[in-house]
Image 1 (cartoon, rainbow, N blue to C red):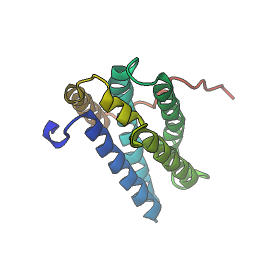
Image 2: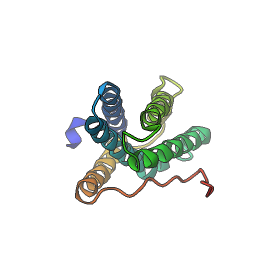
Image 3: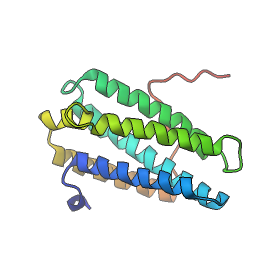
Length: 169
């Protein structure tokens, strides 16, 4: 599996492409069953992606790239996590289901743009920092494999926002 991705950034970009493809399929889906299946897959992929970024990738760059870049990424993740948990708890027949998936798609597009922007994006900053991207890839792949196994076996717990305080209504 490690051979498929040259480094940690290639792995994250592959995740981005996969999720973009799933969002596109969701937009074309007509049946509730199809929408439910795709929404679940989108949410699982995003939960795993945010976990490996937050547990391994982002901490490796704290103090090596702009703090603001990392801070914004965590906050963007939290916005997505709120929608992910909402989508996972809902059904395609519920009010706002499609709208939530669409807004999540837009949030993810923005986040991906921030990470992948040439020269000033997060990944461009990361490439200039002194971090072993191959070693990072290996740790991220190992963790991703664990999380995929957990997702298949028992499901992943709800996404946990770290920077946004959710007030009880």
